[in-house]
Structures are given as C-alpha cells and as structure tokens.
Image (cartoon, rainbow, N blue to C red; front, side, top):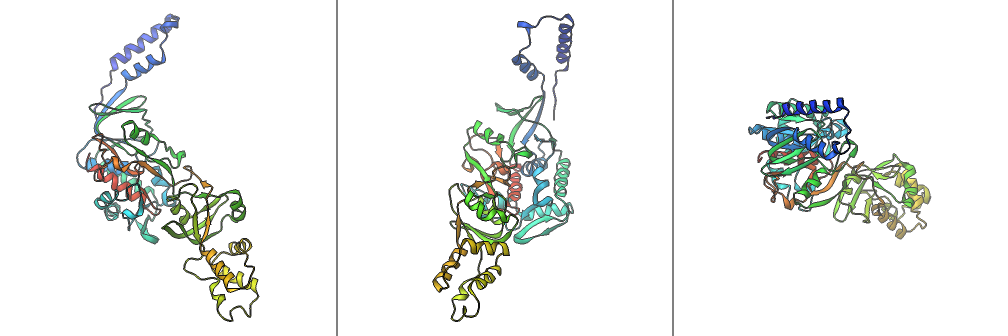
Length: 436
C-alpha cells in the first residue's frame, strides 16, 4: 500500500492558522467556512492504493480477502466497527455453527432460486472443513449436518486472521466510509483517508442486529451504481402475536414443544418456543423467512402422531371418563401446561367419533396470523438485498459496473437456520476472491 501525504503544505497551513490566532484577526467574512474546511480536509487526506478494496470484515469479506491475497493481489479491508467478524463470534451460542454438510441451493431463499448453485459448487462445506482442520480446530456435528467448534467461535476468527496475515491482507478497523465514487478506479472516502482500488467488493452485510453496527450502506451503494435491490426484510426471526392470541399463549412463556410449522408447501419440523411476545424457536425462525405480512402460518402440534383417533375405536371410551382421557392423551405429546391450555381453548364438548376426529384435525392444523416479527433488532439475518439478476453467479461481479462485486448477506440469498448462511458467505467470498 502506498501513501502520499503532503506534509509540507499541511505544516504551512497550521503555521498560518497560528499566526491568524495570535493577531486575533476578526474572522467575519474571512472565517473558514465548513465548505472550506471540507476542501482542506480533502486536500490533505492520506491516500492509499491497493488492487482490491473490500468493505466489511465479516465472514464473506474476509474469505474474499484471503482468496484474493493468495492470488498475489494487494488487499485492503475496511471495517466500520472496532472488531472484525462480530457475527462470527456470537453465532452458535459462541461456538459458531460454521457450515452445514448438507448445503445445497434448496436450502436458500432468493428471487432466483438457482443463483447460489455455482458458488456453492465451487466452494463446498468440505473445502471449509479442510481449512478448519489445517488449523487444528476441534469441531463436532450436531443434528442435520450442523458443524460447530468444540471450544469457541474465536477459533474461527483466529484462523481467518492468521490466513489474512499469511497472504498480506491489511484490515483497518473503526474505519467509517462516508462515500464511494468511481472514475478510472473505485475510491472509498473516510474522514481522514482515501482508499483507491481497481476492484471494490461490498461485503457490508444486511440490517440484522443493528446494535452490532448493521447499516443499509451496502444497499445504498448498489442503488448508487444503478443496481436493483430486493426490499430487505427480517429473516430467521421470532413472530409476535396479536392481543387475542398473546392472551391465549404468552403467559406460558418458556414452554417449548416440537411442531411442524408450514406456509404453503414450505415446512419445518423442529422445536417451537412460546415467548412473552409470541412464538420463537427453530421451527418459527425457519418459517419466518418465507412469511409475508398478513399471511397465515399453520402449526402441527403432534407431528406424525394420532392423539385422539385411538379413542374412536370400538370400546375405547367405555372405562375412562372423558376429561381424564383427553387430558392424559394430550399430555403424552405436549407439555402439561400447553396440553391443559389447549383443551381450554379447544374443548371437546361431545364424546363422539366426529368430535374426536375434528379435534385431531385441529391439533394437526392450527392456523394463526402473526401480528409481525421482532424485526431487524432480533433477526439473525436479512432476506432480500442486491438483486441476483444484477450479478454474475460465478464471480459475484456486477453486470453493469465492471470491477464491482457484492458478497454475503448483502446479496438476495438467504440461508435456512443451521450453518447455511455461513456457507453462503464462504462460497460467495471465495468466488469473488477468485475473480478480483
């Protein structure tokens, strides 16, 4: 990286200001305006140049930097926060669910469901796992192909940082980019510096978890360069309930049970958790990515089980009083508090086959309309983003602006829960890193 500060002019200016202060000259029309100050700051900004400039030191940005560095490119990464990889560090309960062995295009939501195929094929979970093992990071597999660190997510960050150092990547933290412009090169402007490069990679993430510094900057850049952006929305996020449904369920906050959550043909069988504001847990987070406001969500509270149907058999109801039989049957599949509440909300008033069959149907197909979600503040990821029709599926480069790339969460590719979003970050970052 080269620097070219004009130190002599800077000291002359400072000396001139000192003389003005000593003379106590009235400023009035001679007063240095904000515009003049801005022009002066621009004249004396330290200017850097590298082959590749990456905005964002998250998973996708760092992977892109490492791959570009391996190819001999000089790489600078600018990160607005004071620490790289903040989402990596908090993921998986602090152990980082760093990939999923079953990653394929069907695990991702996008306006173009085929877009992710190329990148996912070029850089697979096995490729990232090989990197993890080269750094001797202990890991384990949980259910459904989810891979976690045995010790800490910091192991993944240390690995990425060491790889960056090995290939000469420069990472600058606490560096807020104010604007980006493009002439012969791309130039990112901060308060004190200008960073120029032949290739610009936008890896600024989405809007989820704003307390960690999430901003719409990546989307704004895309629009600035004429690219379409699919409206961002919270994904992998808890639902809130309307007042009536909240009254029915939310006093049982902390109760969880296995359900199948469905919207249309999309469904997930995992745990659901009742919260003080609505429904959460893996099943709800998963289906939330596919939900649109006003849409119904269906819940099956007894997946692949028949609760009341056995009571329709001949002689099955002769010896046990109705309330006890219903309660005992439901408590076999639901936590006690939820089973008892269910019977209060859906009383079976007739001891007939028809009534029992209807109760069985209701248990397997309970519909509700969420009042909303807990928003970007609690969402794990952002759905929507830079329209994939604007990008090369192989390189992540803009079709309209050569040399401009978008990777990771800022792109309209959203993974399901369970390590898929990290795999997209690694794969898209790798693809861009091979092209810049």
